[in-house]
Length: 200
Image (cartoon, rainbow, N blue to C red; front, side):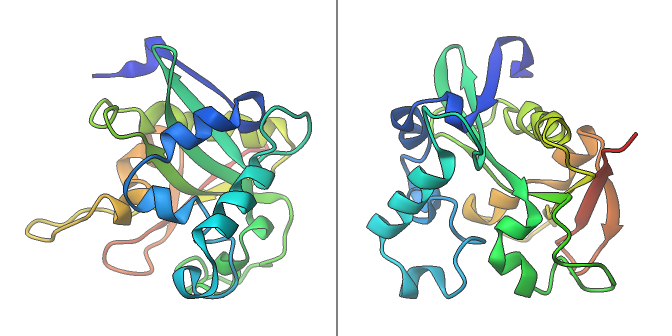
């Protein structure tokens, strides 16, 4: 099912914090609160859930004008999905991760390159293709805010290999292909760096 006709996607600061919390109501998303690439140390050992909650609330800026850390998707009026999209420099752990940089020689501190690091679909709304319109919306969102390029770090599933929902928080390759991203590198058997040029 393509939910595009019944989906509305807004910057997180135009949504309520209560709606964001409803999206992050179960599983790994509930614990991580989209902080995996935000923290500089090991997420579970060096931060508490209360600290991650407070950080996410501050980052989203729900209900206030100004910058925000992502997008909120509504399906039939219900908060159903999330995409983390910001300047790449807003994710300290991306800077030290091997995946984004293997085989690349690029300025890690370029503020005009943005990144999509996480797609979350609320329990009860999964399996409806909601990540597709979310990924497409990240492109328009980054372009409107002056980004020169937008990256994602998705994975592919392999026959016979178990993939947990938590692993796929980075998104699936085909979702970003649909949104116009092209492969930059293939740093590991299951992971890709994909990018869309926003200057055209």
